Length: 267
Image 1 (tube, rainbow, N blue to C red):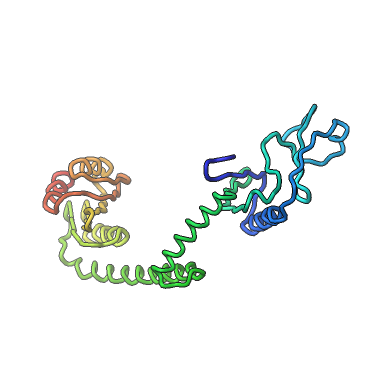
Image 2: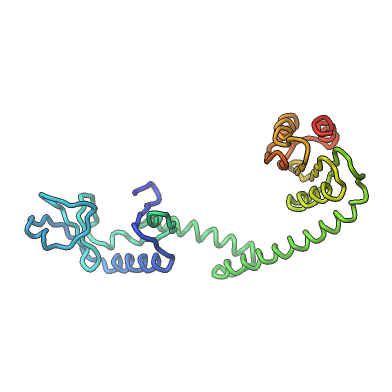
């Protein structure tokens, strides 16, 4: 399938990255050999003994395109005079599907433009991570590992912080609301769950403010939160959703306004 920038190739069987690389290497070897592309119109008798690729059975005049040492196929499309005119082939991605595999590829000048773009991005990443251009992948892996450790440490701190605040909330309330700054969504959910379980409230709402919005996680055993969320988002310029028992999202409103609307809807 020919696109303006990318060509897609569909195969009838599964494929892996190693095989795709072998195909790419073999295709480029034929380009660099710069062999002539041969066009012929064999007779019906010759076709009977000729091995060639075709999607369907053909009769009458058939146009055969041959790349010596590489391919023989029936095709009525346009072709280069020699393989070297393709310049280079670059296979970009592989997707295995139920009925086979699809490869995205580019060639010639487009392949050069793609390489220049990817190379430019890699240079920027290299500079940002203070890593050599051929070591950016390992540098990113180390960064992800460090972030994982930081998230784990933050989760432990959030749990300890929540534990220190539990005594501030009364038992058996219809609605408990808590406002934080910069708490991640996972910690918000865990804190709301603790409020529900340990304080036996009907509805627990945890809000966390960042520079862009006030994020929320709300749990309830008695209020239909799906309906509450629709009204909450509508009145406080928010987005979000969930189930009748739990919703999460973000609002654009002040603390007092949020508290007032929550008391009206769930208090």
